[in-house]
Image (cartoon, rainbow, N blue to C red; front, side, top):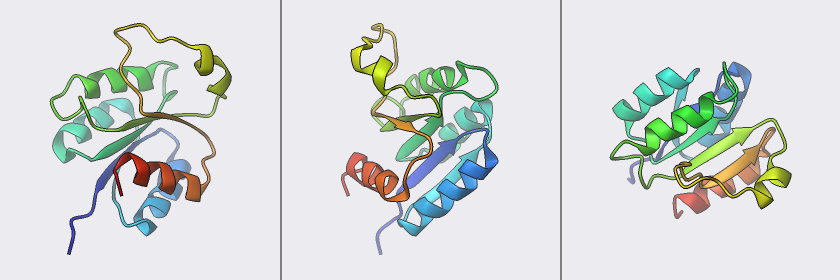
Length: 129
């Protein structure tokens, strides 16, 4: 039996967290939840997930970016796939957006709401399944 891949969801929207957890569990993943950035970073360190999905705007506009920076600064976070999640349409601005050199790498920006099949496809692709 293969070990399930671990996914960490960091979002202050409880409904989104639980709905997304169900989708990912049905996809065969072990899912961990954090309802704010501070808990998300702590959980990252204790769980060492294979992928994390981080909401961009939680208590503050930039909280997701701070979480992203802290995770990327850890040994396990340097190369782990990280998805950024936003209820704001970022595709337009991000298509021409050239992030500063110190901006942490994001593997994919997801727009809320994410379709279940799309989410599972992105995750499987990022994890090489």
